[in-house]
Length: 223
Image (cartoon, rainbow, N blue to C red):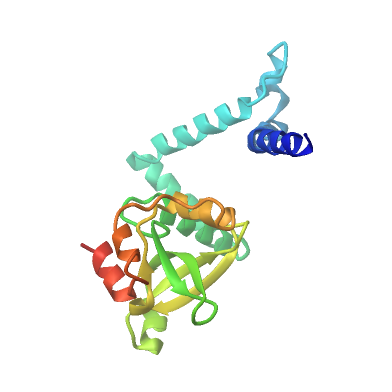
């Protein structure tokens, strides 16, 4: 009977806990986005005219504002205003590094021609025989390439369970094992500490013959 109750409890926990965490995170996001109205004049706050508060209205307003900014910056006048604003931002000592870093990070994630964080790799880190899952962020250029004198790549290795922190390493390209899994699957793998493993059917026959050689793996993924 105790084993049966324990099994029911664990089954219920597996159903309830993800739902609770999802609702909890969404509620935090909604409250955070709704706080945008605090900095607005009272005359512009929706609660001034509505009979009751509508949760999540801040998300709609923020989305609409971002959309309007995007539309404005697609024309000549908008681009000129953007260039002027960016010029002012880059002249402020404390603001310049934050703005430039944030802009480069967003371009890395959203530009179609940028391969950063889109290719999942496996690399021996932090020592030989121990592998870490990481994301290829690009080819090494500039001083790093000149000083190393090899074909190296930049890799970001996230931490578990918080993938927003991690390690940046420079590795020889021939030592990198390229994986087929999608970036979102890799994030799930990392955040769960390996509990959620993506399905792997293609090339599965190669693993039956032993470990996959790194160079052979690279050839497979670059075909």
